[in-house]
Image 1 (cartoon, rainbow, N blue to C red):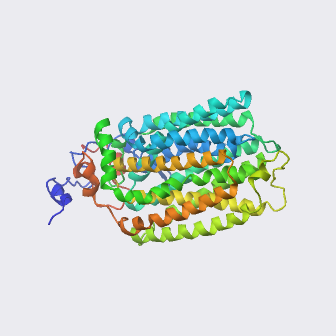
Image 2 (cartoon, rainbow, N blue to C red):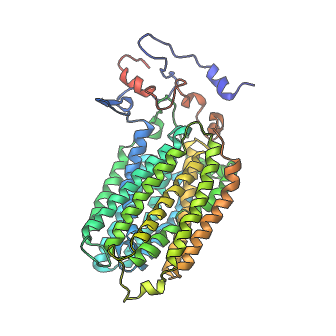
Length: 517
């Protein structure tokens, strides 16, 4: 029996081939004519910059938005306690962040689909600007209420930003390129935290004080504002075209009603995603322990800043290795899904096993004492915990890349992936809110450590049935189009070409003046 794709393709006449052009002209029923500056690559000697409407360029732009906004948020929290001597205010603010984030996160995909990518990302970025400014204010007036309010508002904004980001990262690339795209994003995003970490490191290089200076927060404010503005340089998802001429699968004209109903429909039709929910929930649980229970508890401000830089550098390494490994050619996607599950389980046991040995050397009561002297990078024995902290950062990126890749393996439909990203960030934030609240209640560090290890190991075991049964080698276009107003003719490739080849819009862009598309 002929497939739906074959039946539809048979009704469309093939594009005419002329001697001066390859046979890749888009059919006239495509909504977007692939000509103009957005579809023209630029060459500078041996270097070719992809056309602006390509998934690669759009992903890089989104990555730099996150580089400047969540990246600075991570840099702020990475030094422990939001850069303050006492982590209580940061704990309470982060409880507010992740509490509102967890609620908004579930519906953030709906918001992103309705408002569009640019507005959603820009509004999200402004929340990070306000959050950082609240710490600058706190340095002068100790107004904890403002910091908590800014945190609650950030939760709303962050939910929007991450849903839009997740949809772009998972739906724009071809199936065989999703690992690399996730890797590129995670490396650029964490580079923001690395550079952000150099700001407090430089500001406090000769200081052994307990909190960061005003200049650190002002630098973060400037960068987060730039990130919110950068979001407006993106183009609408409907204008994004892959190198083979295929387009992203999205709903054309979503309404609030259709989006809310679609959210429920996704839960009904993709019920297996609940097996990933424990991995979602635990994916930010460990940040509280890393930032406050290890870095903030044991080290002075300049050493915390150095540790933060090394932590996020290790994330870049982890994202590169695993992102590209997940796109290895010649290996079935089902095989890669199972292998990465096994590797992640081994890393969980090895790295957190090493962390147990370190945690047994100190307690919260000891490090909370006013007479306790925070350790410096010149302290004897610093190298061991430094490498442990780097492995914690490596592990974080591996976990996040794997979870995103698993979600991306379920579908290529941008609307559904926006909802998946919303589920992910919602549950992730619920876990983080609880973890920060536990830390604010001064629960012993060993108890928090054990909760991390148990949650991570158990969530991997619960994800096992999903990995074994629901990850497919490919997802058909017909299956992806079930929840879209689009048809195969709207999104099909222009020709059977190798993704990433110099074709599609790139050729059309070069020959735009000759083309009458």
